[in-house]
Length: 195
Image 1 (tube, helix red, strand yellow):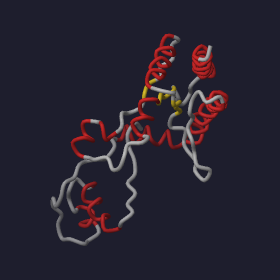
Image 2 (tube, rainbow, N blue to C red):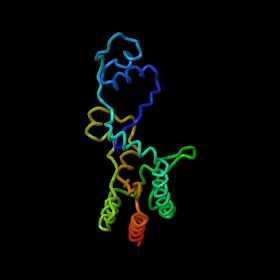
Image 3 (cartoon, rainbow, N blue to C red):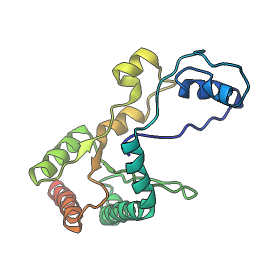
Image 4 (cartoon, rainbow, N blue to C red):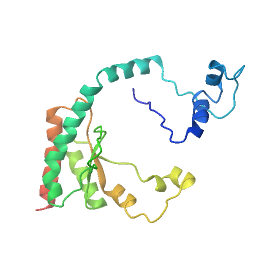
């Protein structure tokens, strides 16, 4: 539906506050359960409810969730299989998943040798009609991260990976020709890089 989500709480002490925040800062749910005689604003909150149109769109996606997920997974697996020889040759890093985990094919990425190579790859693919983009900058170096957060310990991986990672197109309904165009572009780039 574009936006949406779930909140999973690992400390029951936060349940009441989360409910209040969800209820626009009111104790409305407690009122409906008969726990208070009237409801009022008691904390920060907002409206997170989807519109009827968004909910209808979500319902359609949920009805087709297996089809959508299988389609995305097939594209993800085609990329992985196609680029495994590049990984074995030490030219790229591919997504790594622990054996006891699964994923939903949210994205597929390559990790290049360095920022310069990533920039060349993105430009190379763009010239061939493939939109590949870098991922987010690390939170700790973003304006909000610098303002509200902190980085704990040495930055041994985060910035380095961020500067080398590029995302490849991956979406539901991606045609076989489009997938092959991406694969061909990446393979051609690395063939030229190693000549």
